[in-house]
Length: 129
Image: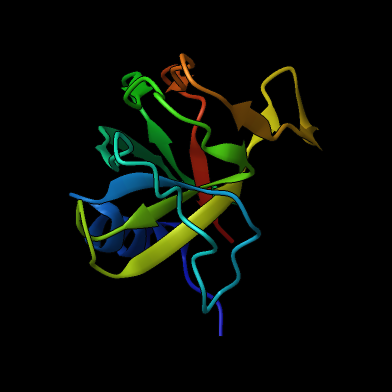
């Protein structure tokens, strides 16, 4: 079965509106979110999202997303994940962190004490094909 671009956008909107961005240090799958950062200062972040119909249909952050400054090591963050709530909730989607200058190149980030991870507007793109 195939969906129209309009249907894909409607599905993304209904699932992702009001969701939160989290960070994981292992590779997620369709059934598991991966190992979420557990540092006491870490918290999932809300995001402002826009949708673009096409092939693929995309959900993109329209404002900067900033995580709290690390006061301990968070490890090597490999993926951004979406959840339905700030804590607990349902795992919804994931994306590998990539080099913004070459989207084919994975770009995991090692977060140590003093680091603050920020994603500029447009840096987080979740797709449905």
